[in-house]
Image (cartoon, rainbow, N blue to C red; front, side, top):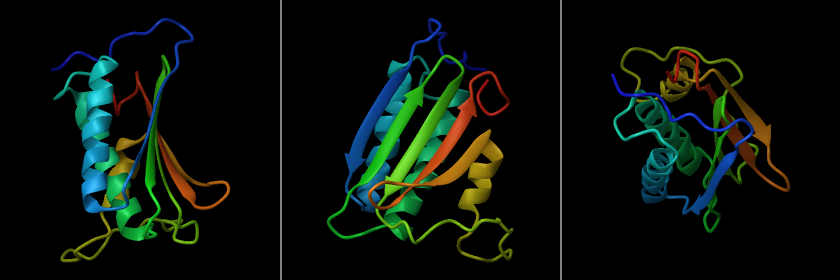
Length: 150
């Protein structure tokens, strides 16, 4: 078992924000840079925390570039680390294309429809928020002492 994320002093908040092209390559780069930043914050590559974040960012970024793509508009990744929580936010400019309010299990041979079930299973909380002036943000939160991130 890998060590948990390194403890921080009370009140420390760390933020990483980066924009990526709204392409599959941009989504892949978002995942790689999120893991690099997490490693810099004390969660080593291959740890439970790192693996969980890799899955979440991969899914959210892939959804943003697939369902939220507007040519010429970027996707934004924002990581916020507090002593008790890690927040992952992925924003795109297609506010009208939102995930379904109620998730359902897809048919056994369906090619898609499982990603947000994975998000729901791994995250302590998740929500879709309006983004001003345009678009939406999918926010996922992990409690650092909870079941999703040891």
